[in-house]
Amino acid sequence: MQAETIPKIMSTIDMRTESHQILDRIDDRFLAAVHALLQTYDQQNDSDEVIGYSVGTNEPLLASEADDVFEAIVEDVKKGNYIEVDDLIAQKSARWQSSTKYLSLTPLKLV
Image 1 (cartoon, rainbow, N blue to C red):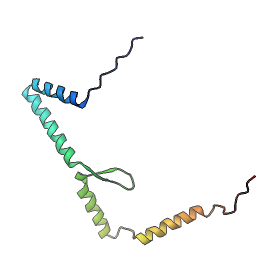
Image 2 (spheres, rainbow, N blue to C red; image 1 turned 45 degrees about the vertical axis):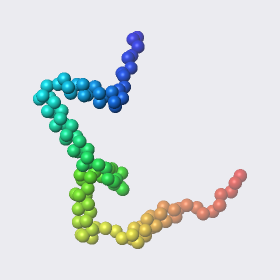
Image 3 (tube, one colour; image 1 turned 135 degrees about the horizontal axis):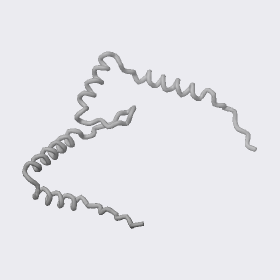
Image 4 (cartoon, rainbow, N blue to C red; image 1 turned 90 degrees about the vertical axis):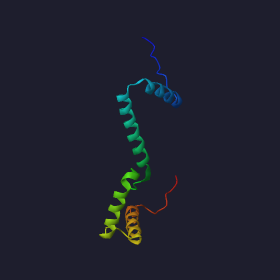
């Protein structure tokens, strides 16, 4: 059985240096394509910053999606689709009480 070769892991500095060397050797058409790819990535990276997380699903909220999400929330509130804090507390308390009503409050005997 041959010994497996372990791939060399390049540092970020090594990757940047090698990338610059490769870019110096490629033709103009391919360079233009790589440049367009890098510009698109850079623009998306800047505008798609994570600005928060969904409470229910813990999914990230991206800056590019924020306006649509916030507008939808405002429309829901205008339509009356919301719950007041006192009602939420009452619901949570009722749910908690119903889940604990079957618990025995008699002390356990230690043997």
